[in-house]
Image (tube, rainbow, N blue to C red):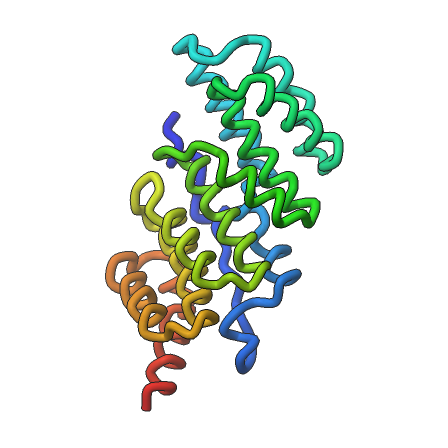
Amino acid sequence: MKDDELIGEDDVQFEEEKGGESGEASSGQSFFEKNRNMLLIGGVLIAAIGGYFFYQNSQKGKVDAEAQSVMVMPVLNYEQDSVAKAIGGFDEVAEDFSGSETGNLARYYLGTSYLKNGNLEEGITALEEYKKGSSMISAAAHGALGYAYEQKSEFASAAESYREAAHTPEDNQFSTPFYLMHAARNLQSAGDNDGALAVYKEIKEKFPVSQEVRDGSVDRYLSMLSEDDI
């Protein structure tokens, strides 16, 4: 099993914005509700990715068995939305096994748990401390950071995080245009319409069979930005 096999086209959804200036950047709550599964992983993806991570590392002998056993209960709490309980468990693993792969993964879970709980600052801190590489988990970490920065109205930082997510681990027709759309929206919110226009064009040219192109979202934004330039 490869990381990129864990995300299919049906798992990736992008919100259709409506109306005026509010159409350029989704409201915080609406954005979170419609994108939380992708931006924070959650749901069906978290068990698959977490389980795959554990399998890979146990096979290579890189993760201490004790660290994995301690992670079980916080992960179960996380999946059941018992976020407060999950936070304590992940924090313990991250501290007690800081030099291990499991300890690093705990920081990812810890960060997204804080975001689920509405604690943006703690979430950002944990996600920044998570050591990212070239995996779908790392892409999700960048995406979660993008969400957090967007909620803080730090749109330039949000766009950069979404860009990182889009190109991790490698470009594809599903997660790449999804994250690029979020990057472009935040560039618009930051007042960088030229940058946003370039990203929309990139999506249309490089990912022509993506949902974002097929459902007309990209063309709507391209048309809107072109009208603004007239």
